[in-house]
Amino acid sequence: MATLISKLADCRQRLFTGFVVVVAITLTACSSVSVDDYADNTPVFDPQIFFNGDLVAEGIIQNRSGKVTRYFTADIEAYWDDEYGYLDEVFWFSDGEEEYRLWEFERIEDGVWEGRAGDVEGVASLEYAGNAIEMDYRLRVTLDSGREVTLRMEDWLYLVDDDILIAETTMRWFGFRVGNIILTMRRI
Image (tube, rainbow, N blue to C red; front, top):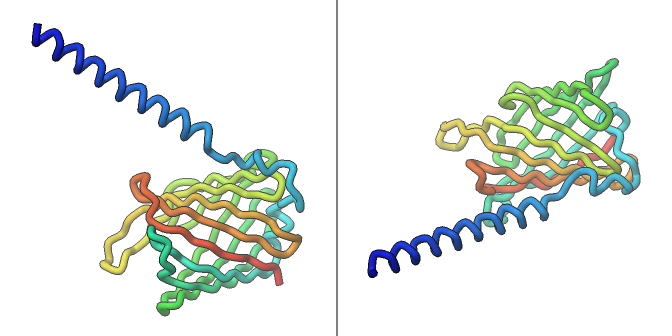
């Protein structure tokens, strides 16, 4: 009899755990934001218009607790040919580091692009609608210790007016948020 009660209790515990997992997955799926949520917002963000010519950026990097750990500025030269876009970026950080990245974007279909850069693993996916862009990619980063890690970067860019955007990036390592980047970008 004791064995039967133990098995029933174990079964009840497994059912409860399964229920909690299903509820958590459902709530997470229901709460995610899509770029389509911004489809009716203005001004309309057309990457080929905004990212064309010279731009400047200013931003901060926060650790996982929200403490600002670095500041940066960047100069960006953006240009296009038929189906490709290029962002030639130079970053200057408050600790003296200088970083260079050349993005190449290829149009896949209306509102969807793919991007590549030397320190990006695989392909970055970029979708836009209304005044927003969502970009997801994996960036190789060298830590102060010299160890290289790959972070998942979840970028959200919002066009404020024809010449200014605000962006927020969530940085994740093995699914855990390890920091944020917040920046402004201006056409000059």
